[in-house]
Amino acid sequence: MRQYDFGMTQLNEATFSSHFPVTGNVLGTFPITDSAAVNEAVASARVVSPQWQALGFRGRRKVLLQWSKLLISRIDEISELISQETGKPESDARLEAGLAIGHLAWAARHAEGVLRRQHRAPGLLMANMQATVERSPVGVVGVIGPWNYPIFTPMGSISYALAAGNTVVFKPSEFTPAVGVWISQSFAEIAPFAHILTTVTGLADTGRALCESGVDKLAFTGSTKTARVVAATCAKTMTPVVLECGGKDPVLVEYDANIKLAADATVWSALSNAGQTCIGAERVYVHERVADAFIAEVLAIAKNIHPGDPQHGNYGPATMPKQLDIISGHIKDAIASGGRALLGGADSVKAPYVEPVILVDVPENSTAMREETFGPTLVINRVADMNDAIAKSNASRYGLGASVWSKRHGMKIAAQLQCGMVAINSTISFAAVASVPFGGVKDSGYGRIHGPEGILEFTYPRTVVRARFQLPVVFTSFRRSKFTDKLIVKLVRLLNGYSIG
Ligand code: NAD
Image (cartoon, rainbow, N blue to C red; front, side, top):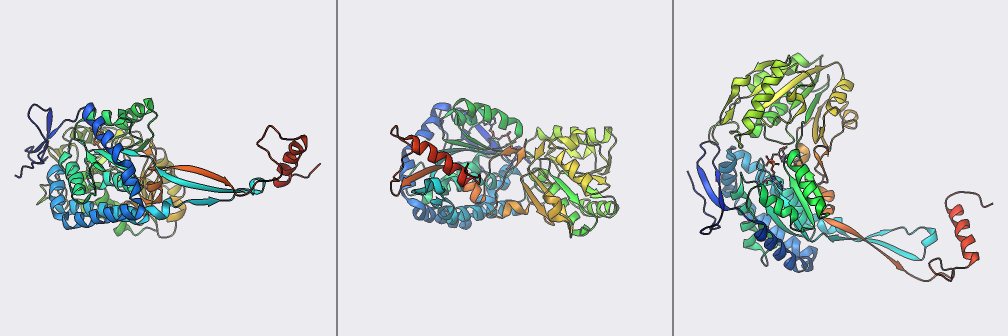
């Protein structure tokens, strides 16, 4: 068992430890950063903010692409660390890190194009004006991350915020502080100067301190419950927030779907990473005509999937031990309310692991259908048609992602779903496409990371309207005449299609 020493803790300092979830062994010890130290980190980030902005798009692009190269060359090292702190297989960690690096490079290459000054039509009444919109970085961005994808998820905010010209202070999850520290230490190796990206480790109070620190924007990824607290804390200082929260993602399987592909991808989406994926499949609505075939295929695949340590399991343990009670509560409620377990059941929860659980015919009001389970469980319910599937999908308080399986009706079904992202004949594919925005609606949050929207999220628009020449008639003056007043009304009528009476 490897122990990590980041050389961060000092004598008499409050600390906490991160653990290997398979054995509970300590991996490393980290400072609990107090609010004074968080404020200091934000103040330092603010001091260097003009310098980072002054590098311009080209300068920042160079730095960020250099960082992405460094991350590629160290991918084995970071994958091992992710695997140790989360318990997930190293190959999954490598995929996660690879995707994060892809987003970093995309943001670096596209920030200039996305944020280029735009010219807007001034309208005939203001034809003498040149109307432009510039985008300015917000300044210092606070990022608070979860543990389930400890590099992919926070980097979705960090990369896009940095590329847009902001400096960043990052508070990783208390379950994955080593990955969080590794991220900023790797950046420091290529950074042109200090404090562009700083990691502050700690528990909930450190997160709260970051919300109260006066950052110019706070990007939070985590549970809906914490998101409400974060939004309320940030409201006190009018700090704008991006909230990337939980989900209860549905899978809709139409009668014309490729059942083998749909079942294979859905099992992976539900069970990989021990089901700890915000955009993972949690509930399936399958057309009754193909339901038996789909369920049979799912069971045939899922019965050969088993959890274990990073070297042996198809997926790892529950990273957060207290999640096990929620998972077993949902399984019990599904069965007590009339659902049937076709694979596993409540006794599949064997700390620290959960064996795959496949449930069918679970009433929609069961907690297993309403709340995020965040475990390797999947509920499959039959529906009469896709209208029924769409209505049930939309009845959730969550609206993060969805997956649709149909050869001919995918786009039509997708257009009716109340959620931020839909994958058709694929699963969670939208997270890997850097050019599209990522985020949810309803209790799944608001704001977007990834894509042009993810770059814009960390900027604000500044409108600049310049008089190219002066008109003989002046509207914005106390010297405005009666003639001008009449002219304004006439012009407004004319320009808006009314006849001049
Ligand atoms: P969590 O809400 O428990 O914690 C998230 C972060 O918030 C941690 O760093 C934590 O220390 C911090 N925090 C806790 N209390 C705080 C407070 N009062 N003020 C400020 N910060 C505080 O979530 P988690 O268990 O780490 O992550 C799992 C959740 O994240 C799941 O619900 C999952 O669906 C969601 N998630 C969403 C996305 C997405 O992009 N939508 C991605 C990954 C995970």
